[in-house]
Image (tube, rainbow, N blue to C red; front, side):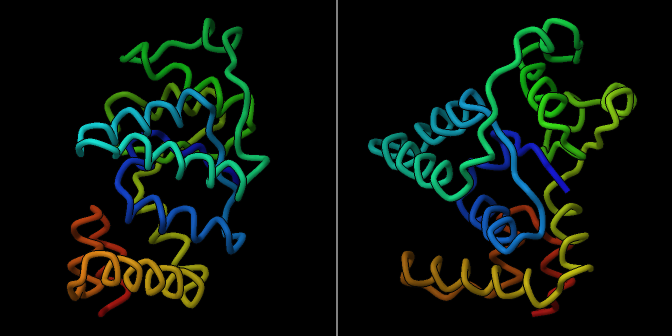
Length: 180
Protein backbone atom coordinates (compact mmCIF):
# COMPACT_ATOMS: atom_id res chain seq x y z
CA UNK A 1 0.00 0.00 0.00
CA UNK A 2 1.21 3.48 -0.89
CA UNK A 3 -0.08 6.41 1.16
CA UNK A 4 0.51 10.15 0.95
CA UNK A 5 0.99 11.63 4.41
CA UNK A 6 -0.63 15.04 4.62
CA UNK A 7 1.26 17.69 6.61
CA UNK A 8 -1.33 17.59 9.39
CA UNK A 9 -0.35 14.01 10.27
CA UNK A 10 3.37 14.76 10.17
CA UNK A 11 3.19 17.68 12.60
CA UNK A 12 2.35 15.86 15.84
CA UNK A 13 5.58 14.11 16.82
CA UNK A 14 4.11 10.94 18.33
CA UNK A 15 1.78 10.38 15.37
CA UNK A 16 4.59 11.02 12.87
CA UNK A 17 6.94 8.66 14.67
CA UNK A 18 4.34 5.88 14.68
CA UNK A 19 3.46 6.41 11.01
CA UNK A 20 7.11 6.41 9.97
CA UNK A 21 7.94 3.56 12.33
CA UNK A 22 5.38 1.22 10.78
CA UNK A 23 6.51 2.33 7.31
CA UNK A 24 10.10 1.45 8.25
CA UNK A 25 8.85 -2.05 9.06
CA UNK A 26 7.45 -2.31 5.55
CA UNK A 27 3.76 -2.14 6.44
CA UNK A 28 3.11 0.56 3.82
CA UNK A 29 5.09 2.94 1.61
CA UNK A 30 4.88 6.62 2.61
CA UNK A 31 4.77 9.39 0.01
CA UNK A 32 5.04 13.17 0.25
CA UNK A 33 6.39 16.18 -1.63
CA UNK A 34 8.80 18.88 -0.57
CA UNK A 35 5.80 21.21 -0.23
CA UNK A 36 4.08 18.82 2.20
CA UNK A 37 7.27 18.63 4.26
CA UNK A 38 7.59 22.45 4.22
CA UNK A 39 4.01 22.77 5.48
CA UNK A 40 4.87 20.41 8.33
CA UNK A 41 8.02 22.31 9.32
CA UNK A 42 6.21 25.67 9.17
CA UNK A 43 3.45 24.28 11.41
CA UNK A 44 6.09 23.29 13.97
CA UNK A 45 7.05 26.96 14.27
CA UNK A 46 3.89 27.41 16.40
CA UNK A 47 5.51 25.45 19.23
CA UNK A 48 8.14 28.07 19.89
CA UNK A 49 11.67 29.18 19.10
CA UNK A 50 13.79 26.52 17.48
CA UNK A 51 10.90 24.14 16.77
CA UNK A 52 10.94 24.86 13.04
CA UNK A 53 14.68 24.22 12.85
CA UNK A 54 14.22 20.94 14.72
CA UNK A 55 11.36 19.96 12.37
CA UNK A 56 13.53 20.78 9.36
CA UNK A 57 16.18 18.42 10.74
CA UNK A 58 13.56 15.73 11.27
CA UNK A 59 12.35 16.25 7.69
CA UNK A 60 15.91 15.69 6.45
CA UNK A 61 16.02 12.45 8.45
CA UNK A 62 12.64 11.36 7.02
CA UNK A 63 13.87 12.01 3.48
CA UNK A 64 17.01 9.97 4.18
CA UNK A 65 15.07 7.10 5.77
CA UNK A 66 12.60 6.97 2.87
CA UNK A 67 14.49 8.10 -0.24
CA UNK A 68 11.68 7.03 -2.59
CA UNK A 69 8.97 8.87 -0.62
CA UNK A 70 9.62 12.38 -1.92
CA UNK A 71 7.81 13.02 -5.18
CA UNK A 72 8.14 16.11 -7.30
CA UNK A 73 5.30 18.57 -7.21
CA UNK A 74 2.87 18.04 -10.06
CA UNK A 75 1.59 21.42 -11.33
CA UNK A 76 0.12 19.85 -14.50
CA UNK A 77 -1.95 17.40 -12.47
CA UNK A 78 -2.73 20.00 -9.82
CA UNK A 79 -4.24 22.25 -12.49
CA UNK A 80 -6.70 19.48 -13.44
CA UNK A 81 -8.04 18.64 -9.98
CA UNK A 82 -10.48 20.50 -7.80
CA UNK A 83 -10.90 20.24 -4.04
CA UNK A 84 -12.89 22.39 -1.58
CA UNK A 85 -9.61 23.97 -0.44
CA UNK A 86 -7.41 24.75 -3.46
CA UNK A 87 -4.41 24.79 -1.10
CA UNK A 88 -4.78 21.00 -0.78
CA UNK A 89 -4.85 20.23 -4.49
CA UNK A 90 -1.09 19.70 -4.47
CA UNK A 91 -1.59 16.78 -2.04
CA UNK A 92 -4.05 15.06 -4.37
CA UNK A 93 -1.75 15.73 -7.35
CA UNK A 94 1.13 14.00 -5.54
CA UNK A 95 -1.15 11.07 -4.67
CA UNK A 96 -2.17 10.69 -8.31
CA UNK A 97 1.42 10.94 -9.58
CA UNK A 98 2.62 8.49 -6.93
CA UNK A 99 -0.12 5.95 -7.65
CA UNK A 100 -1.12 6.19 -3.99
CA UNK A 101 -3.87 4.03 -2.58
CA UNK A 102 -4.73 6.60 0.09
CA UNK A 103 -4.16 10.03 1.55
CA UNK A 104 -3.74 9.91 5.33
CA UNK A 105 -5.17 13.12 6.77
CA UNK A 106 -7.31 14.61 9.51
CA UNK A 107 -8.90 16.96 6.96
CA UNK A 108 -11.90 14.93 5.82
CA UNK A 109 -13.81 17.96 4.55
CA UNK A 110 -10.93 19.01 2.29
CA UNK A 111 -10.62 15.58 0.64
CA UNK A 112 -14.13 14.43 -0.35
CA UNK A 113 -14.24 10.68 -0.94
CA UNK A 114 -16.17 10.97 -4.25
CA UNK A 115 -13.49 13.24 -5.72
CA UNK A 116 -10.67 10.97 -4.56
CA UNK A 117 -12.51 7.88 -5.82
CA UNK A 118 -12.36 9.27 -9.35
CA UNK A 119 -8.62 8.68 -9.12
CA UNK A 120 -8.78 5.38 -7.23
CA UNK A 121 -7.59 7.01 -4.01
CA UNK A 122 -9.11 6.63 -0.55
CA UNK A 123 -9.03 9.12 2.32
CA UNK A 124 -7.90 7.59 5.61
CA UNK A 125 -7.87 9.13 9.03
CA UNK A 126 -4.64 8.21 10.85
CA UNK A 127 -6.38 6.27 13.62
CA UNK A 128 -8.31 4.04 11.22
CA UNK A 129 -5.28 3.65 8.97
CA UNK A 130 -3.03 2.54 11.83
CA UNK A 131 -5.77 0.34 13.31
CA UNK A 132 -6.03 -1.46 9.96
CA UNK A 133 -2.24 -1.95 9.85
CA UNK A 134 -2.38 -3.24 13.44
CA UNK A 135 -5.19 -5.68 12.57
CA UNK A 136 -2.93 -7.24 9.93
CA UNK A 137 0.36 -6.95 11.83
CA UNK A 138 -0.35 -6.58 15.56
CA UNK A 139 3.14 -7.43 16.80
CA UNK A 140 4.84 -5.03 14.39
CA UNK A 141 2.58 -2.08 15.20
CA UNK A 142 2.70 -2.79 18.95
CA UNK A 143 6.52 -2.83 18.81
CA UNK A 144 6.59 0.55 17.07
CA UNK A 145 4.15 2.06 19.58
CA UNK A 146 6.22 0.70 22.47
CA UNK A 147 9.38 2.22 21.00
CA UNK A 148 7.69 5.61 20.48
CA UNK A 149 6.30 5.50 24.03
CA UNK A 150 9.75 4.70 25.44
CA UNK A 151 11.20 7.67 23.57
CA UNK A 152 8.39 9.96 24.77
CA UNK A 153 9.00 8.89 28.38
CA UNK A 154 12.75 9.36 28.07
CA UNK A 155 12.43 12.82 26.51
CA UNK A 156 9.64 14.09 28.78
CA UNK A 157 10.83 12.47 32.00
CA UNK A 158 7.32 11.25 32.78
CA UNK A 159 5.34 8.05 32.46
CA UNK A 160 3.13 7.74 29.39
CA UNK A 161 0.64 4.89 29.55
CA UNK A 162 0.06 3.72 25.97
CA UNK A 163 -3.65 4.58 25.86
CA UNK A 164 -3.03 8.07 27.25
CA UNK A 165 -0.22 8.69 24.77
CA UNK A 166 -2.26 7.43 21.83
CA UNK A 167 -5.31 9.42 22.89
CA UNK A 168 -3.16 12.57 22.98
CA UNK A 169 -1.92 11.67 19.49
CA UNK A 170 -5.56 11.35 18.35
CA UNK A 171 -5.29 7.57 18.04
CA UNK A 172 -7.91 6.32 20.52
CA UNK A 173 -9.03 3.35 18.41
CA UNK A 174 -5.45 2.10 18.12
CA UNK A 175 -4.96 2.63 21.87
CA UNK A 176 -8.04 0.59 22.65
CA UNK A 177 -6.93 -2.15 20.23
CA UNK A 178 -3.56 -2.41 21.96
CA UNK A 179 -5.51 -2.81 25.20
CA UNK A 180 -2.84 -1.38 27.47
